[in-house]
Image (cartoon, rainbow, N blue to C red; front, side, top):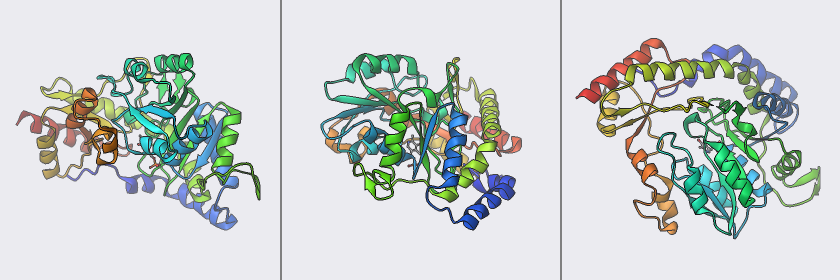
Length: 368
Ligand SMILES: *Cc1c(COP(=O)(O)O)cnc(C)c1O
């Protein structure tokens, strides 16, 4: 049996009529950049997130960059984030001329550790980017308290966490702003690139909306220089059509994750993901930690099962960050994690048959 890592074709087959109709409307109206379809999606996604404002952007990386820019982050400032994330998180900081400072993560949830955060704050620190990795919320209350006491901004990287709940609160409502990606394989995926910021701060939302469109307030009136980071109408229409399914898809992801955990728990050399009791994770990825990760991946591949590694090299060990001079051993939890993590196939349309096939294959590979 072949089990793909994600299956966007299977998803399209279930929503074809909705998506095709949404795209046709945009073509008919020729509302390609900004316009009514973007506005409608922003309203719908704001309601889904429980925030007052959503601003659609060109992608998730630009959402982070615009949020930081609107909060005044620039040269001379430092922004603290984690090393076990996709490089977009730290690129957004560097693009503004600010410095990146990494801190290690919690062993259990693999998200930002507030104790490490507090120790890393300097007089240059301006903002913090916690990453809700794999769809599991960061423990935000201690981070928000530290941010408040040091006057720091909190920009959450929620690119993997659409709909995740922390202590009864949607993650989009925590901190100054939350940034989403709608890259096609994300929990809510466009049919191209798209992203958004969510916030309850109307002034901040206004600044971001202006910055994403060349700093303009009217057609040819520019309050500042900005960026060209708009969402396009086709993506907005597809996202609005797909948003109606997101709750159901998230339930499916959670059901699949629970099933994987039931089948793989208490195997020697295998750690199943932890879900904090006060959180609802949305399982963008289902990530095991394995002693013999690479051998198991090889076995699964031979049986037609695609897996992923998120991420094999922590950012501080990437050639791109050689300038930071952070040797092996700088962040032991993130480093150990990068050697042991493997992501199993997980998407709403995954069948019970496929899931059991994967779980049996993992059991057998681990026991070899
Ligand atoms: C996908 C992702 C991004 C970037 O989003 P794009 O839309 O691809 O620019 C940022 N951070 C994390 C953690 C991501 O997974």
